[in-house]
Image (tube, helix red, strand yellow):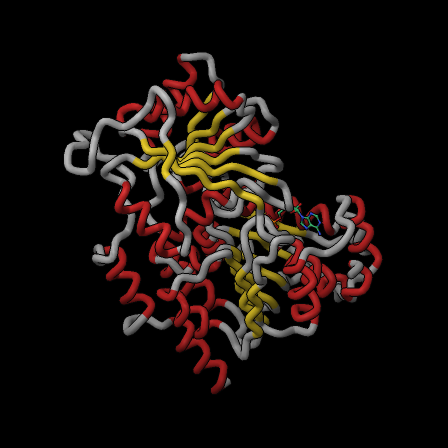
Length: 426
Ligand code: AMP
């Protein structure tokens, strides 16, 4: 199928061909016509399969029928969980809107940077706003932005936005929106805990699950290497040198570990930097820009880098510490093998972490062989490992956060259920 068969207008077709997209990806083929029809959608599709264009193109199409009002009312709100993802999506949509006439205005707002330039940029309104929740609310409070004309709400990485850390902000935002609107949810993962929240937000949604076929399956080779916890940095260095990895994204469990591991790599001449939520936004942006521009060989990150970030032709992801949740395993490894290219995802598994990794395998119905690397064979067994990995995984026993999340999903607020009722009575 050609893009032109999807009902998109000439400026958008021209923009995708400038990006050398010859045909729509399966998710674009499935979602674009449905979004153009105005239906609510709930899309579950693997990472790296073109979901930004799947919602951005039909929404730009909607905005092309601009009403010429001044200031422009914000018609589309796209919420994302991280600042980097906001910047990435804002800039991608800007590209897609490049040939639009009359020109469309895309506002991108996120925290960690001064609010004043964002307030200035929003003067005169915007057609589409891409935002992280906290900064969006700040801008509303400063009266820099009004959400009462929103026609479409998009939640990208929706399951993360339903998570406890965002639940309150999301509820407050949804209350500011008109009851009658189109809602689009996108993610690679929708754990059962968020199903009720998703269902409350949507009205008669069309569920789109893009099946994995050999053609769409990102070609990620998953490797599991058994290693003792204290030897992981040496093993990482060995693998980087042995395989000549030009770039690797390494996930660790803590902010401290990002800095510690990056420093150890720098000491042996490997250009590495850390990336975590407590760095200044300028430092975060610099690390990511340098890594994308291939000026850094290794980016050592917490899960703040796990969602949505598109690093073109990233060959390797390493789980130095295993992710806490099985869902994050998918998001992490999805940073490689994107847009049809291939990639390798390596997980270091110590004796202590073995049971946790088996749980991840079980959740994703996979079984991967354990490898050992000559010179790094583990000595410890699960009973003897003196340095257990800091990256614990969620097990079957519920922790405090799980219980709170369940409370959010079940009895307690059900914020969108109330909203839906309000809509019915309006
Ligand atoms: P996303 O899932 O939106 O992060 O996109 C993943 C990657 O796929 C990005 O590098 C996009 O530029 C690329 N991409 C999106 N749509 C297409 C397409 N139709 N053909 C080729 N590449 C695409």
